Amino acid sequence: MRVVVTGGAGFLGSHLCDHLIARGDEVVCIDNLSTGTSSNVAHLLEHRRFALVEHDVSAYVDVDGAVDAVLHFASPASPVDYAKMPIQTLKVGSLGTHNTLGLAKAKGATFLLASTSEVYGDPLVHPQVEQYWGNVNPVGPRGVYDEAKRFAEAMTMAYCRYHELDTRIVRVFNTYGPRMRPNDGRVVSNFIVAALAGAPITIYGDGTQTRSFCFVDDQVRGIVALLESGEHEPVNIGSPEEFTVTELAEIVLETTGSESPVRYLPLPVDDPKRRRPDTTRAQELLGWNPSVALREGVQRTAEYFRSLGMPGAL
Image (tube, rainbow, N blue to C red):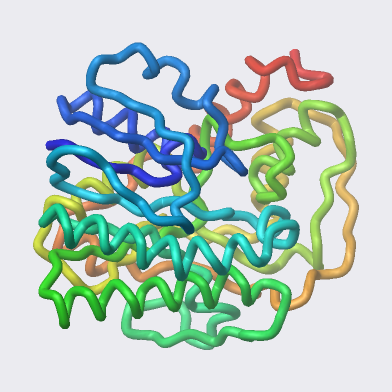
């Protein structure tokens, strides 16, 4: 296949590019490098089946030649990023989705949207099933990301129904692993970087809020399985195993051998109290289950940060 991956120089997108190249596909990676970095795909730049195009998909998108699939992963994806870039976040979810859907329609390509567990907001249904409509504050500080993704889902389904475009929607849950940015504000990277530096690990709230953490290799397997399916409705891809934030901190401290203290600060506005996907559809439709346990994934991620020479890393 010839595949366009927007946001392909980002954390998750770059791993997806790796997977597609490894299986023999040709990949056109489009990224404006606002949160992604060319270093994530540096090892692919000389590959004959890979091309990096620096472009903001909020502007018109065109790709020469045939395209078999368009995978739309471009977007700021952490609270730190979309707090700094609220307008850009809304634009890439709306204009960017419209432009990439238009590319897929023009090329007769399959379109896959990277949506998010954030469409469920601070959920009142637990675990979260795809049929749940969510509990989102549209005017809160997280709303720019939540509503951008909800709009992107609506636009994708409109193209599916009205234009009969072959579409997919994956709802991604808390992915982590190598190539996360040390300062991206996500809880796994925050905790590991602090632990390696011997700095305090900061827990917002009382630490009883829960998350489900999916290692990036498992996430990519699920995304590709969804791409190859015929399923148009949203599918959750994430770990069905739930941990409190305090439990995550304990695992990070044990895995890194750190003696960092733990401190507690107030919970940010609209921060979800519980988050765990119901993955029944992924299991039944795709035959997908995650295989990397949290301790193993944290260890592999910590090794990556050590390789960057993080302060205090051994």
